[in-house]
Image (cartoon, rainbow, N blue to C red; front, top):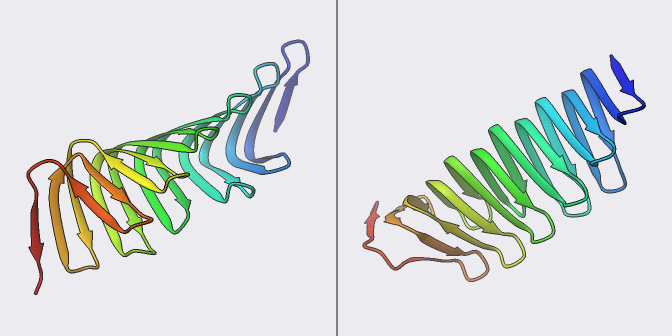
Length: 173
């Protein structure tokens, strides 16, 4: 079902829908599109797939401000890009700055470097390939080391994990 309010330039859909532009595809069960503000609200198994920037974001709810290139998610959020899977309750992604902030039950799985991180708040700079955590952080390295600390920095280019705070490393050997 689709409803278009011409005077307000609003489009509503109910049922599996897809919005497509040159680089981005958005899928969801329910859409609200405000043509004047160039804003899309997608709800129900929402997904954004950006072919140009090579990422996908999944969530219960996604709000996409196309002009500002901002994406906000809420509920069961998952981002996949560059061999990295990030899962959290909430995402804020600034596509212009290429920075993702994830909050609430954050899990990172770096498939390339075999690193897993658990925390409550991260900032991922995709351009620099850096991950910053805020607060208590648990990391698992190469499936044999457990790293416990807070406010951790991961440089994926150098494969370095560090913290200026008290840290503990447990070795499975």
